[in-house]
Image (cartoon, rainbow, N blue to C red):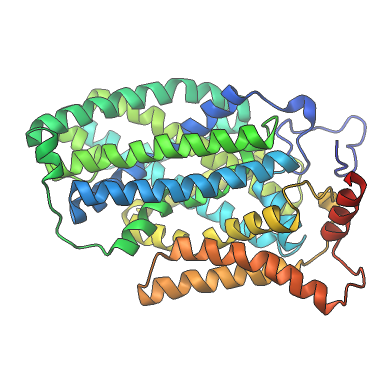
Length: 446
């Protein structure tokens, strides 16, 4: 087992989710346990809403091609990040500390934790709107407060709490979505009628891809929070890839089918239209709870890294308070703009992690204790900025897909920047702690 940080003092409280250290071998979990948790995380209701919006713009056939493309991009991206965290035993924010530096990596905690708090608020808003409509209430903020507190309970418990909740929510949502799709196909006159639909052309293809990728790019970047518990990088990659291909495509497909058939991109509003208020509220509550459970866990881990605390729980509480307040003020109404923002600043972070893991670390654990990482890993930081610049260029000009461009440029820039840095040092051995430890490990292996 690779060396991590100093062991805790005798009698000290140890968070069994290891927010500041590598996950030890005895705490690793089997593939099925990981699959259940990841599946619950990927089952994300706003993905269906985005699928409905894109389907309305393109018609079902072209939309389906875009949806599969978005899912494949996400699957490769998420699965590779999952493998990196499983190999190192580190959460995404701790891997970022090795990639960007002890201080530079704080940006990862800020942007990932902050956006997950935003997603928490969006999901709470969806929950309160759904329940208030079902109950006929004109005021939804009390339900936002109730949902915000309720959805944090299992995240406070940890990985096991998320796993138990996912066992309930995933089968229920699959059953509901399949039924809605069947009704939608009947409504529009069969699959021939579904594929004969045309869109209004209101969304360019690049923006459509960014929106669909953006629905899960923030959460997907943080797959390491759960994949670090996998027993091998291979298992983590296969679980991540399979889950994203199947479930992400299904979520977009279900949302698009309902929108095309009934002219309603909002999945929750569609349930009301079909008179499924009671059943819909019951099933969607579990789904939204599972999604926000993972979001709360993620910003709890990010907060622990940001402030160097050995427990995630205070940050879960703080993030829930902020996210619930954002829900009460109507953050859910700004969903599309938020997705575009996520598609600009987050994918390059995942890209630089992937580029470093594949080409600099050569798919190995660099072995550097996370509490001894150098302050700034400038090649990683420059690579991230290059990727962000490419994503911003796409956002401003409308050329291509910002999310995809940001990832690709950051992946390529990571090994290039490290190579340039080594040439600048003249091969003197003045490497960062990560690079030095990696070279020593490779030499020992050879």
